[in-house]
Length: 161
Image 1 (cartoon, rainbow, N blue to C red):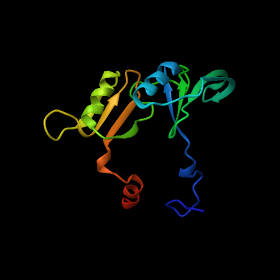
Image 2: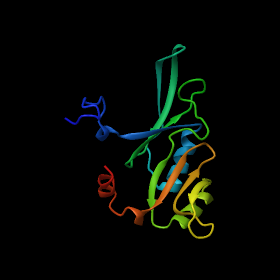
Image 3: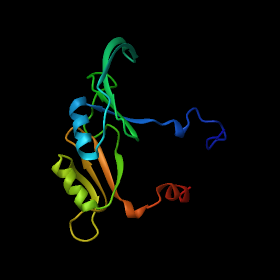
């Protein structure tokens, strides 16, 4: 079994990661948005009424969520104000990274879909180059990266260890 940097077996295995969770104000709207810009398919929104223990005590909460059918998997969770499931502008998951073949063209398409350009590299002129960050009005952040920079992503990762 693999060990962590201290030599101890870590409590989690990176290979067990199965989704990235994002708290959103409206699950259906976020599903539609992510389908439009990335082609995700989804489970139906699910709902569970559960007793939840939090720092301020126990409450019964209704949690609504949906999972992407496509990997890497995303879980969209409907916000529940006043709880840990509160959507915070610009502070959900930091970003979801995607490779693309043409950063400037993809950037324009994301802007047209309502994802404002937040930051990007600019090498020649004003057009985004190499990478760009786009932000939805509800806080979801997407990074697009030029695929040619890392044509063999696993090898690139291993070369950086």
